[in-house]
Image 1 (cartoon, helix red, strand yellow):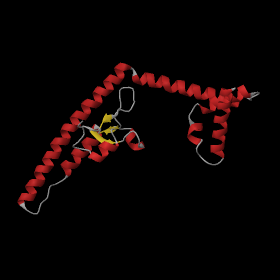
Image 2: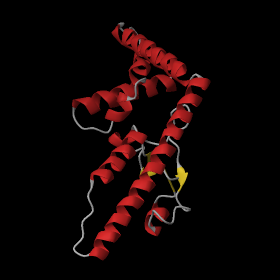
Image 3: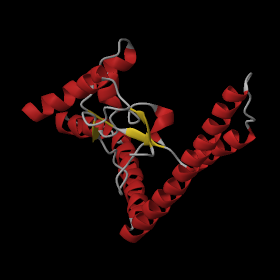
Image 4: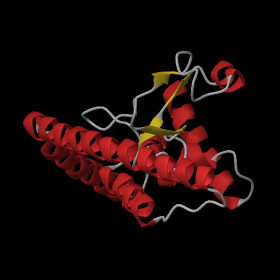
Length: 189
C-alpha cells in the first residue's frame, strides 16, 4: 500500500507503464472502500474498484535527492526547526519507500523470470504478428461469392479497427459498418 500512487492508472497512457499489474501483465484492481485516508468518500462511492500506479525506486530516489538538496529555511528559530524536522522526516520516509520499491521490483522480476512470462509474451507477440499477416493475405485474395466476402470481413475485423471505427462519420465509418454488416449477413445465411 505504501507504494501505491495515482488512481485510474489503467485509463491514462503515461500512467499505464507504472500501473500495478499481476505477474502476466494484467491490471490489478483494488477495492477503494478501505482506502479512507487517501481517497474522498465521493471518489470511493463513484469508483468502487480502481487500478493504481506504483511508485518506482528511481522516481522515489529522485524525491529523496531533491529533499537532501533542499536547505530548510525559516524566519524564526521555531520555523527553522520545524522545517528541518519536516525535511528529515521526508528523507527518512522516502528512503524507506526506496528500499521497499527496490524489493518489490526485484521480487516481481524474479517471479516473472521463474514463471517464464517474458518468453510467453514474446510467443504471443509472434503469434499475433502471424495472425495479422494471415489476415492481410486473406484480404488481398479476390472474393467470388458471399462466403468469401464473409471470410474477408472476419479477417478485417480481427484487429478491432472495424469496431473502433463503426461509430465514426464519413468514409471510414461507412467502410467499417459495411464490413460488419457483410459478416453479420454471412452469419445469418
